[in-house]
Length: 149
Image (cartoon, rainbow, N blue to C red; front, side):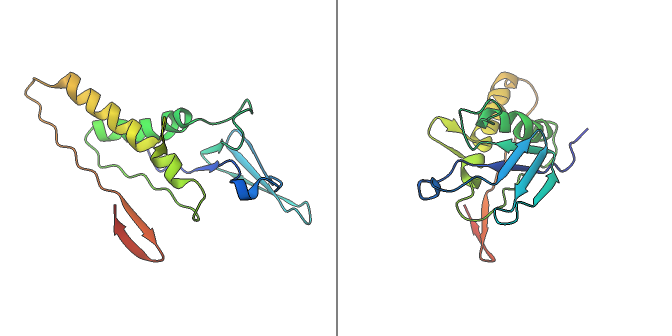
């Protein structure tokens, strides 16, 4: 059975220009809490997944592998079962979308991890009567303009 829509949020580490800032976000399991720094009022939100990737020293730090295991594996399983799949990353510039989706250096994101596993499965299944066709597209929507990546 195909998965339904899942919604996840991820907090990235501070950029160098933000190092003097105070983190106003807390995450525990699937709950994200944002604290207004002026009024100290808290707003709590529930998602399918809330990933704390702010500080690698924290015990509940979410690695690229964690994100892939939770989100990418389901997309991969659906694709392997013959379903069309989609994965969206949404957020403001600099919020970590590219890191989660593509990754940097040794920290591979969801897309390269899914592609590696998909093609490894195809290689293992090769030689039989089954044929495989893989199509993928990536696009960026920025300022209401679509750009094919």
